[in-house]
Figure 1 (tube, rainbow, N blue to C red):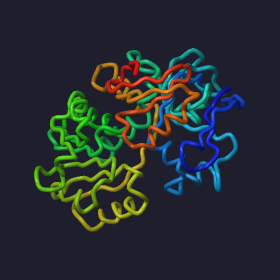
Figure 2: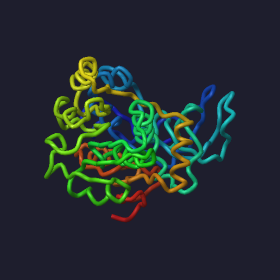
Figure 3: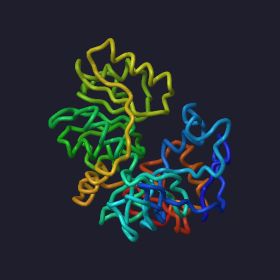
Figure 4: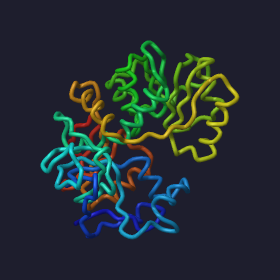
Amino acid sequence: MNAVVQTGYGSADVMEFREIGKPMPGDGEVLIRVLAASIGAGEYFVMRGTPFPARLVVGFPKPRKDFVVGLDCAGVVESVGKNVTSFRPGDEVYGECRGSCAEYAVAREGTIAQKPRNLSFEQAAAVPTSACTALQGLRDYGKVRPGQKVLINGASGGVGPFAVQIAKIMGAEVTAVCSTKNVETIRSIGADHVIDYTHEDFTQGGPRYDLIMDNVGSHSLSETRRALVPQGVHLPSSGHAGVGWVIAAALMSVFVRQQGSPFFALTTGPDLVTLGKSIEAGKIVPLIDRTYPLGDAAEAFRYLDEGHARGKVVIGVFTSTSTRSSTGMLIDS
């Protein structure tokens, strides 16, 4: 099968399109014929090999042989392993798998769900990791309640648009922080207020918030928490700020009334079902910046490396040309 294999750590040049063996599902696993995948911050960190713990999973001093990149996928069940009861060949699914940037990939039964009927495969592939991160952060760690004031810093990246929409579903008053070019897009998905960070700093006076989900780490911890109410919740969810920033966030929570610490989300079947219901009801729309064919995955990583992606970057396994969109609907560039 064709796949995108990571041969080292560094720039997008470590991504190699090659033919490797087709995987086989084990006990409790499903083999998926991948029709689309998406890449984001997790794949970026793996490509760079930083933070260092990424190498402990992928391989040291270089990725293990035939390491296929990608986690998020959408496709059709090809076959199932022993004891799989929820899926059968022909089912259209989305979720997390091992090595999604390939024609076939294996997923655990508990990390996939039936694809929302109103989404294309490209749209569905944009959902799993980012949407589960937003959902679990706001629901399980932040415990957002109706009427609370929530700020999403980094509202136009991979996690941010889902966080804006999910916080609105939970009844919050949502303020989103993004750049000028993304203001109208983020407002269109439901943000009550949008702050253009090129003109305004949300940490310098102004409203205080019950919860801040920080997807970029663009301010110091003390600056960010200055924008919280005395017993507010701070949810740092970005690896971009470095390990030191994450550790400091955890330690600071010990000494202040404001709560919050870095959290780690998992893609689960039940949460994908929950998200799917909201998607089919039109309450959540995935935002896709660009989609690339599998053979051009290195170019997708180069674009991701620039740090300006609006929403998700998608790999269409059988897509022949690159496309761009900011609405989740794929259009010609």
